[in-house]
Length: 73
Image (tube, rainbow, N blue to C red; front, side, top):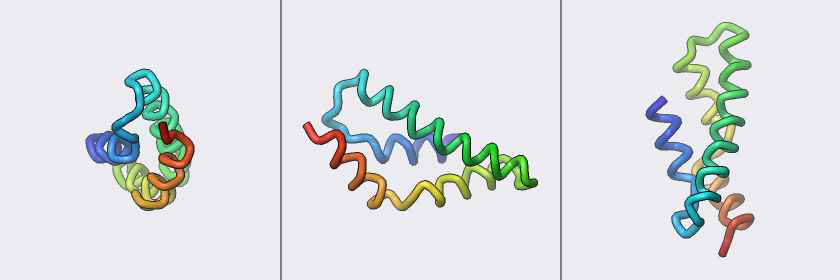
Protein backbone atom coordinates (compact mmCIF):
# COMPACT_ATOMS: atom_id res chain seq x y z
CA UNK A 1 0.00 0.00 0.00
CA UNK A 2 2.95 2.34 0.44
CA UNK A 3 3.49 2.32 -3.33
CA UNK A 4 -0.14 3.30 -3.81
CA UNK A 5 0.09 6.09 -1.24
CA UNK A 6 3.28 7.45 -2.79
CA UNK A 7 1.80 7.28 -6.29
CA UNK A 8 -1.40 9.07 -5.33
CA UNK A 9 0.47 11.74 -3.34
CA UNK A 10 2.75 12.36 -6.33
CA UNK A 11 -0.27 13.31 -8.41
CA UNK A 12 -1.79 15.93 -6.13
CA UNK A 13 -0.86 19.58 -6.74
CA UNK A 14 0.96 21.08 -3.77
CA UNK A 15 -0.88 24.39 -4.04
CA UNK A 16 -4.32 22.94 -3.28
CA UNK A 17 -5.96 23.60 0.07
CA UNK A 18 -5.74 20.63 2.46
CA UNK A 19 -9.44 19.83 2.18
CA UNK A 20 -9.23 19.60 -1.63
CA UNK A 21 -6.06 17.51 -1.40
CA UNK A 22 -7.84 15.04 0.87
CA UNK A 23 -10.87 14.80 -1.41
CA UNK A 24 -8.71 14.33 -4.49
CA UNK A 25 -6.56 11.74 -2.72
CA UNK A 26 -9.64 9.77 -1.71
CA UNK A 27 -11.08 9.95 -5.22
CA UNK A 28 -7.92 8.77 -6.97
CA UNK A 29 -7.26 6.04 -4.41
CA UNK A 30 -10.83 4.81 -4.73
CA UNK A 31 -10.56 4.47 -8.50
CA UNK A 32 -7.30 2.58 -8.26
CA UNK A 33 -8.52 0.26 -5.53
CA UNK A 34 -11.71 -0.49 -7.48
CA UNK A 35 -9.59 -1.56 -10.44
CA UNK A 36 -7.27 -3.54 -8.15
CA UNK A 37 -10.31 -5.35 -6.75
CA UNK A 38 -11.23 -6.34 -10.29
CA UNK A 39 -7.77 -7.77 -10.92
CA UNK A 40 -7.88 -9.62 -7.63
CA UNK A 41 -11.29 -11.10 -8.50
CA UNK A 42 -9.87 -12.57 -11.70
CA UNK A 43 -6.99 -14.18 -9.87
CA UNK A 44 -4.09 -11.78 -9.44
CA UNK A 45 -2.46 -11.45 -6.02
CA UNK A 46 -3.32 -8.19 -4.18
CA UNK A 47 0.10 -6.56 -4.61
CA UNK A 48 0.16 -7.30 -8.34
CA UNK A 49 -3.45 -6.15 -8.65
CA UNK A 50 -2.55 -2.75 -7.21
CA UNK A 51 0.51 -2.47 -9.46
CA UNK A 52 -1.60 -3.27 -12.53
CA UNK A 53 -4.29 -0.79 -11.48
CA UNK A 54 -1.69 1.96 -11.07
CA UNK A 55 -0.30 1.22 -14.55
CA UNK A 56 -3.82 1.34 -15.96
CA UNK A 57 -4.48 4.68 -14.28
CA UNK A 58 -1.76 6.29 -16.35
CA UNK A 59 1.72 7.65 -16.21
CA UNK A 60 2.48 10.32 -13.67
CA UNK A 61 2.78 12.91 -16.43
CA UNK A 62 -0.53 12.03 -18.10
CA UNK A 63 -2.43 12.08 -14.84
CA UNK A 64 -0.69 15.16 -13.48
CA UNK A 65 -1.45 17.11 -16.65
CA UNK A 66 -5.11 16.18 -16.34
CA UNK A 67 -5.32 16.98 -12.63
CA UNK A 68 -3.37 20.20 -12.86
CA UNK A 69 -5.65 21.32 -15.68
CA UNK A 70 -8.69 20.73 -13.48
CA UNK A 71 -7.33 22.17 -10.25
CA UNK A 72 -5.08 25.02 -11.26
CA UNK A 73 -5.51 27.83 -8.77
